[in-house]
Image (cartoon, rainbow over all chains, first blue to last red; front, side, top):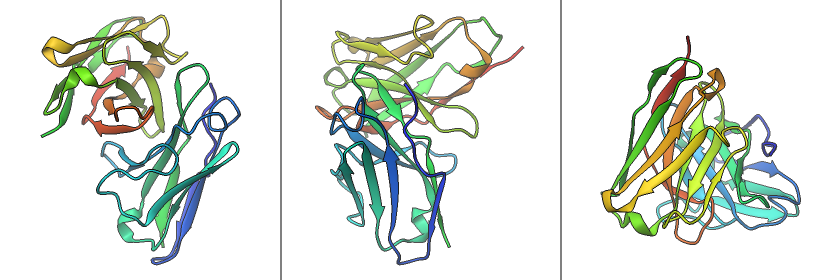
Length: 110
Length: 120
């Protein structure tokens, strides 16, 4: 199972919006709404920020949103803040009952 | 407090074995599926294995299938990962993670991780 494709890096200025894409295939992203997104700060465990494509866990900022179209899922962070600088990973359920992560995206706040 | 705590990591030679443990507290462990996820130094996250609440459903990544075995003891609120035939590429921080009920792949609680180093 190949890793899902994400841009290596995305940057934006404070207050701007950014979008991170996560591209898979009809065997994973395109076939299920089990897409999750995680935020990871250096040296820390990942944190769930979106699950089932667009659901936000309790306590996650409403500046964060998720969507999906075909084989590509997207994570949007609006009103970018310094604390949003981190690595972001998507993951999807697959037709072989396994999970696959994206390669990760480094978000930089300029 | 809802918590997962991994242990058992360390330095092991190629071809060796290691057993990781994950101790759960603060929630009804027996109701949740639990997964192992690893992260090689400076690299991204890699899903390793999953086990359902009653151990009825177990899955592995192709990279560890046949070498790793996941198991759980609901009476002891604990999860294990037995790793055999270890390779240099298994070097990573290993996390256990809880899955939100009914939401596949939604890991809402993570441990702090335990480091496994495979080297001669």
